[in-house]
Amino acid sequence: MLILGIETSCDDTAAALLEVKSGRFRLLNHLTASQTKLHAKYQGIVPEVAARAHLETIIPVLTEVLGHPVETRHASSLLDAIAITTGPGLITSLLIGVETAKALSFAWDVPLVSVNHIEGHIYSVLLSPVAFSETQHAASLQDIKFPAIALIVSGGHTELILMSARGGSASGGKNRGQYRLLGRTRDDASGECFDKAAKMLGLPYPGGPEISKRAKKGNPAAFDLPRPMIHEPGFEFSFSGLKNAIRLLIENIGRDVACNVSTKNDLCAAIEQAIVDVLVYKSLSAVTKYKPKTFILAGGVAANKKLRQTLSDNLPKSTRFLLPQPEYCMDNAAMIAVAAYHQIKKKKFVKYDKLKADANWELV
Ligand code: KG4
Ligand code: ZN
Image 1 (cartoon, rainbow, N blue to C red):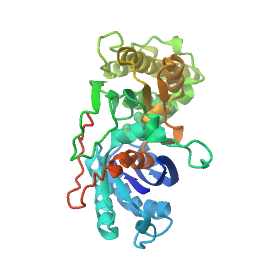
Image 2: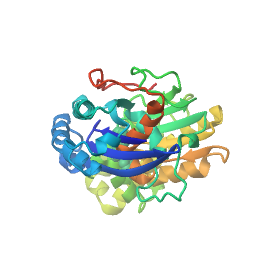
Image 3: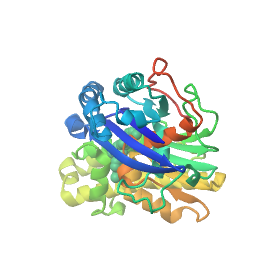
Image 4: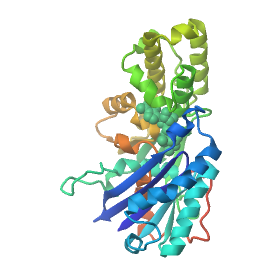
């Protein structure tokens, strides 16, 4: 089976060609055109700018991934489906991918599968490096044993989800109860907290990688930051209080001092530690309560080494820890193609004239 994945929900224009052989995934080609530099000067994503960039980039990205112009039918005749992210995300960004996928489906006569972006992140844990040889063990859907718990951490999401069975998010935009929300953030997402803290420290966007790079040279105990909601019952998160505490701390020590290299490293280490402590504590509480067979960490913040290591050190041995290769943590189209596979097997296709983008599509 050959699946073409397309992802344009935020600020990355991405396409991927995924082969599934005997139920095992093999990524043949993928490309993500990042708009990070374009948005860096605004310290955040400007939807209008993102949509224009998607429009300019989508066809060149598809041409590169397919290995030929989209108007030639060569590879399309081998395709079994086009997997497209229809939500959640920025509506102006989503529409570029969705309308492109609809046009290709009509022109090539290849069926469409509608994929939830968060479900894509969950399935990113099954992707192997692109240079993966066939003799190595490639992942299959069976690698996720149920019940499973997924911690989704990105610029827009911080959620703990209980999965009782394989997803099925394309079924008319509704899932069938396989996903249960244990808790989510009440305000800012964890990635957003990294990004906003970085902005306060004069570091470039996206802030997560910058903070974690500096944190390695700093002392996390140098500053005392709160761990919001850590001891409250339940699995909800809140990061806006931490963001305010960081702002007050910077004001107290003085902006000049905060921008001194070693103080900045210490601040980064303290910020990273506070965020990781909350995410890990809540995750381990959920694991104690629900005893999942699999624990999944996914989303852009899953690239954070401290978070990966701390979870790996503390999860019980009876729980299998699945996490994406660093290259598949950030938004990409390969994860969208993987998430589409179980829907394709069940022939859950959407006709091009029925496919719609849904900016607020909730997985749970
Ligand atoms: O999943 P993603 O690519 O886009 C969204 O769907 O939001 O996640 C982007 C987020 C940004 O907030 C970025 O700062 C964060 O992931 N991020 C990190 C790291 N790499 C990316 N946060 C902490 N540590 C990292 N190494
Ligand atoms: Zn994402």
